[in-house]
Every structure is written in C-alpha cells, then in structure tokens.
Length: 195
Image (cartoon, rainbow, N blue to C red; front, side):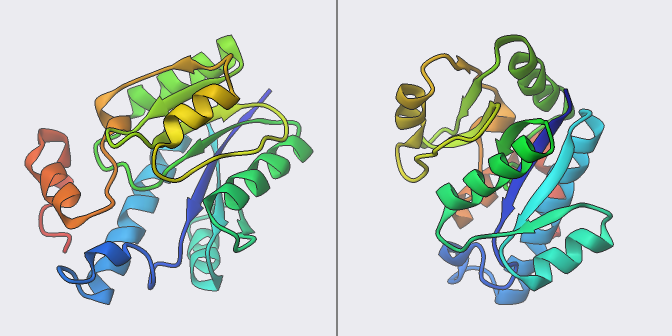
C-alpha cells in the first residue's frame, strides 16, 4: 500500500506571521517555499507520495509547477487540512503521514524511519520540542487535535501509535528564534543566506 505524505502549506504570503517583525513578507514567502520544497523532496526520496494541502491558489500553482499533486485547504485550520488529506489518501487506497513542512533539520533517513514504523505498526507519532506534533501517520479517516500541546492529545487519541523522537522532527520553525537556532545547527547550513 502506498503512503501519502500530507503537507499542509499555508499561503506563502501570509505564512510565518510570527516572524513579521524580523522578516519582510517577501523573505517569509521565500522561506516558506524553500521549506516546503525541501520537505516535499525528502518525502519523494523516502518513497512517499507528497500531497500538498494548499492554503491558496499560489501554493497550488507552485505545487503544480513542482509536479506535485495538491488539494485545496478547507480553510478551517490545521485539523481540517490534515483531515482533508487523510480522506484524500483513503480514497486513493493509501496510508498517510501528516508532516509539517517547516522542519529544516529533517533528514531523509528520519523520514524513512517514520514511514517504516507506520508500515510496521500502523500508527506513528513524532513530537516537536514545544509539545506539538511534527508527524503523525496512520490509515483511514481520522480526527486531529493540533495546536499547543497537541502531542499529548494525539497520543491519547491514537493510543496505538509508536512514538518517534528525532532531531529533525523535534525542531520546527514557528518563530525567528527557531530559525536562528536551526541556522546554527550543522544540518541547517542550507538556511544561511536564504533570508
């Protein structure tokens, strides 16, 4: 059974709003595109089928230009975007992994590990360092509980899930300090000069 990597991607123009004091709209847009492109590429390399849940027409056009399928974001937050992706995967007879697109330290080996655990155990969940959920894999329709502290809510909701904690999954980019931290890590060298 193929596995779909569901990548919810907000509008490049409106994304990363918490960095507005430090980065211009153009810089935030460039960062969002670069992060999404890298994550989608890692998904392909890991043998997954990336499907973007596109926050607007610009993201959908970008996905098409990259040769990636996309579905429209229902516009009711991350839970609804993830659910739309899971429904799409189920209709395509695929398992799924909801994966944040803002994981600058993620490696192909870590993503392959997520996919292998999902294949072996059915369900997998990876926390972010701030208590969120960086990756969540399963099969069939599901109801999600994203937001602050989502890891524990998801762990309670998907109690059969195996937990995987890895550097590349722990470090997401929500703030400018997250970005600066990622740049200082050896894996984050690709971010230098991006903004």
